[in-house]
Image (cartoon, rainbow, N blue to C red):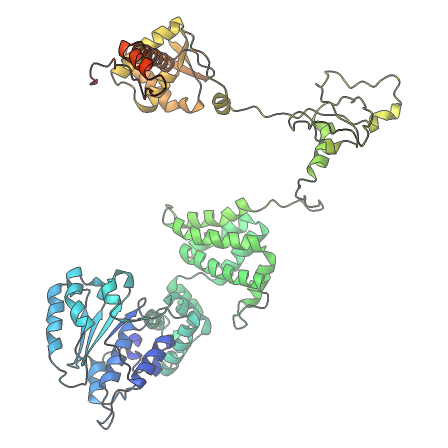
Length: 619
């Protein structure tokens, strides 16, 4: 007899044998017991969670005849009657399974629906099970809508899909929908223990934990991986063999990485990453294992008594949770999640793994040297004191003239701008600190002042104001008036020729139009622009090439400053002059003058546009 794989051998035959889907089992059991049966069921969920199994058990419950042949609809099929045996073996004539992935056309669906007019041959109900129903075409869905809405009383539809979003709402509204959930790793592990106990296979609990996590919620995947692990381990399941088979990373490597990151030890991080490379362990598996450990660490940090007592790594996780701050735990967890997506982008996944791990060290707060108190964060209230403390070192000081204290009833003095003087909170009450330019020599002391007065004098220090960037200065500065120059005449003619020939376009054309030619000699021209965004190396090189093609083989230099004569300004001035002339012509027209006299307050001109000087443009 050929070997039957565990996934088929241990497929549940009754609702009581199903694990991890109690919400679906309870609903169907109650419906069968009370015989409140719907005519169409839709089971959704990921692969290997029991959609087809539930469909077959439901078909047996509807058609079970009992051991004595006198049974009826039941939630616990006997499994020994002819109907139950035939359904389990896949030869029951009244139970039809259609694979919509390979029979997705309207012809296949119509052929199935043609059987609906005939009553069951052996059982009480005909059951049509359509697997992966979302693969049907639109015409196929439309062909089954009427029968699905009002089927014969002896017909039941069971639909199964892994992607319910692709099922039309017209079909969803006609079905009773059940969502089969992915199974928890602990549920999968417990079921594997029962299966291996029945098979007589020795298994270590850590090995079963690895298989349960690798299954990712699918019981069929878990049983298939168990079959593979049994073959790999020669009839027994050991943690080391299962970890090697799955390519999983040993938790000791993960603990070493997290501890090194907590201590800022970059050498250990790189060495551990190289060890993973030498052993051929998966980089993605490393980040997955780290994410799992960091998640449990975050739980321990938030709820100290919230860890899993049965977890053998609970003590080590608690130690690391105390070693790594909570904010860095969250940061590292986020980096591990996002780093998995970067592994496929890098030419070497281990180099990408090293970069992901070292990223936390790059963003890790700087550690203060031993013996030095940690720097405190400065608040707004501490800022004046900090300025006063730094002032004697920042610049040369000058003795301030003391001002008599003003009476309390006097009006408050106008506030001093922040860029012009030190805040008054840094000075004693009743004294004003005038800001003066620092002298070139050492500070002087008045002749009549006592020798110890220097240590008690309060001084005002000028605050350095950061210079505005050329871009900001150009934006805030008003435009300079147009001043025609001889170099401007030459540059205007040259640029107009380049624009007419379309030798310059886009940013290169803007650079030529907005620039001013300051000087030119045999092999070098100097331009000036007002905006730094126009001064780009690529634009300068393209403008130089266009000038060379026009017969000007020169090198271009560009500076940022005030522009008084540019082709763009000349064009704007010419356009303004044409506009003024056009408005003067219209306003001096005799008809317009007569209209103004007849309607002195009831008229206005919406817009006046001069005639185009471009012969190719229609007027």
